[in-house]
Amino acid sequence: MFIGEHSLSMDVKGRIAVPVKFRPMLNNGIVITRGLDKSLFVYTKPEWGKLAEKLSQLPLATANSRAFARLMLAGAWDAEMDKQGRVIIPDYLRKFASLAKKVIMAGLYNRIEIWDQEAWEAYKLGTERESTAIAEALGELGV
Image (tube, one colour):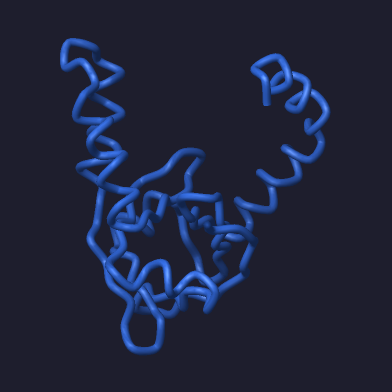
């Protein structure tokens, strides 16, 4: 399980060091793709397989299904950690998430999200302000 918020630096080649506690879960390969809210989603190969299977089952006749599948699947990148525990983020994904030198890697149970630090701080501040309303809405869903 991925949990926690980690502040990292990205080098000029687009590499970031994966937090040590995440590395064992990512040893068998990593898939990085476009996420939501201007972030990137990072999955283990097994978790990616589950998601890709669900996406492949979406109805082709529905424009939103096609668009979401394209966003996630066409944007995906197979990655591996190097011996120093670093992973490279390709240029097209760095541009999509507007990643600068300072990034946040946030563990979200079965995936990791990568954010530009300034975007993360702004998003987090807004979410914290609305936390009561969000909790109430999720309570209605049984969460």
